[in-house]
Image (cartoon, rainbow over all chains, first blue to last red; front, side, top):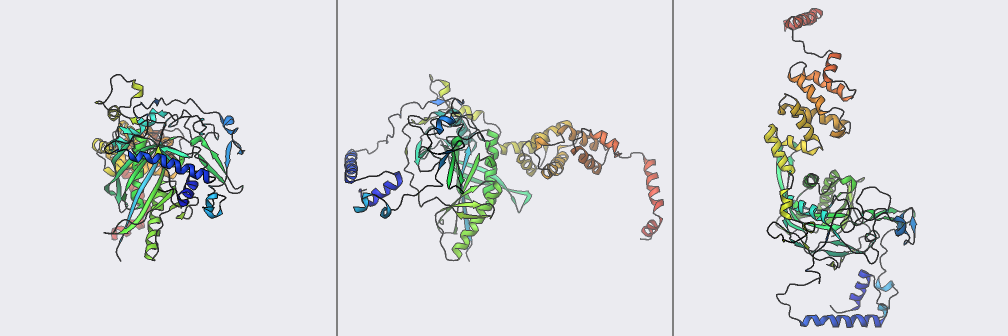
Length: 108
Length: 463
């Protein structure tokens, strides 16, 4: 899929990344070009590998309680808290549409 | 007008009954101080990694076997990405590509026309069972326009059971979920209490005409009980039929069930179609399960989950228990359903039968019609019953030996219910409820009654 404005806008919304400027978008285009080289390899009949760990054993842990009880430490990271709860906005604040965003993509 | 065919599928999330979470060692417990059962991994702090809990794997295998599934000896973990305040990592670890169990079935029973005596057996196909993480809890504070987040539940192990759209109405959906609940509770893999959020059900509903392709489906969430499940499904079927008959269309959307209004409403915060950007979980190798044949010789047995070993140790499932009750005690199938439907009732029944000469076929009437209605009237569980199986057995023995009448027995039971510690025999003596066996005494009483009602007797004799 070509890195069109529509695709870049979609990516910004899905992953909350900000391509920031032409240099950022160009870097993305080069990365896609680099990855496209994979298409040159004939993988017919070969099982896809999705992890170099595939031959490792998945370690199974015993069902014992060994962690937790560190409320204060965790809450130290919170910008806002209310009685040991983390505070978040009322719901997901959707990213404004392309036309309304402060993104350089508008100009493209 | 051609009839509409409703189609109902279910996605059920059952919390695994375990001491610690799916990928971390923090405790699993309902109702604890906020954010006290949270590890660094659960809070998604950088540098933490998931470590799989063996108990959760065993629970999923047990459940898969009980639901006649094929267990995948190799299953994989994936990341499902979406943004929400109660999902600190920004993704949920689940099994989207290759889940732990697939292609099973669940049989459940329905009463035809609400008559317990006419039961019909239905089957629903189980598409798959997958292991996944639960999210934290969001408490919405609309007055201050904020959400309070408690991560105690974040990372708790879930089994998602996907039921194919083989059901056609609310009653079938509720019956299927009820049977699943009983199976999970029998296995111990989940306590499956809906009220505590240990069993959550989402319904997928659509309607179409016979011969035509399936209609657009909606997803209904926020269903907190079996009763509401039936209501929500039936309401949604009706809503879709009315919408289509009025020339409208059905949107592929997520709706929430409003229990107060008894209807479904579009859910806020679900912006269009989600793209979850599924990707393999890079920190977890494939999960390999073994059976007797494939068991490697030199492996640490703590690292091995043996499907055959688990299969051999499965307890009797509800359907098997019911057949055994019918065979052993000569009761009817619908009695066995009623016994298993109430926690502890089967044990109570069997204890009474052990301690009385009354035949099980007669005892069952006292258990289901008398004891159970008392319990329901007072909203008590079997465990909370003021009348123990010993006391009830004593009472039934008096009845069986014809020392009291059936009516008197019911009176004694009412007294026993008060829980004042008296035995049935003591109550019978106190209230003089003994059956009079002496012929002469009976004649005297009858004569006295007749003598006292001369006019009525004359009227009767005259016809």
